[in-house]
Amino acid sequence: MASEPAVAGAVPLRPTSTRLLLWTLLVVYIFNFLDRQIVTILAEPIKRDLDLSDTQLGLLTGLAFALFYAVLGVPIARWADRPKSDRVGLIAGSLVVWSGMTALCGMAGNFVQLLLARVGVGVGEAGCTPAAHSLIADAVPAERRASAIAFYGLGIPIGSLLGTLIGGHLADTIGWRSAFLVVGLPGVALALFVALMLRDPRRTGLAAHAGKAHGSFREAFAELAASRAYVLIALASGLVAFLSYGKGVWALIFFQRTHGLSASQTG
Image (cartoon, rainbow, N blue to C red; front, side, top):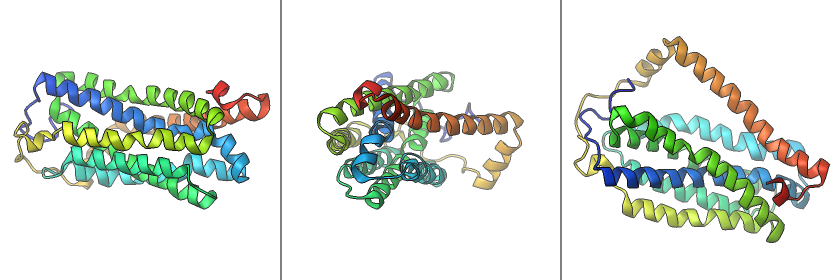
């Protein structure tokens, strides 16, 4: 499965176009995690300002985002795999949604408004990685595809790092509301760059529009479920994410609440 391009007959992009695609997707993914993670460093100032409980903080930093992000990822991935879909347009549109919703977090006046904005961030970000992986599969030869996806994956640590550093500094200098606006609005400009500078290989003649039809979701699921290695890796990855995301949120709150560190010091 991994050795076959996402679209049968796909032709790799020219090297310069491939580099532009990969670097742009990396920046997009950095914004993805920056906007996703900044709420963790801002959680304690938000709690004080809106008088939230720890349960409400947990919903804002965890379930409100993760539930919609995870559930919507599958149908969005199926849509991205359709031969006539525009994956660049999907990424640009998703970037506008999650960036706009991140900015709206700074305008929330109560818990419900902030919760809905965080749901919007999750909905928007669900469209990024499925389309990005599909683009990489078409743009990069099979023997270099693992490296390309690993390069794209650098957006996770870089974006998480910037989210805590930038978010903490902004929280201490201009407040948590302005912090959301500062990190959210540039994503709209990046979405315009994505839409203008990138082209889906399917729409440039560099990837074949026709080919073997994709199997059904049931067939794909059955094939994956039959792989013991895949099942164990998926379960292990889920448990790692469950623990690491929870630790990441409450460790930052612990340092601020218990040890009296500022948001920027914690970041």
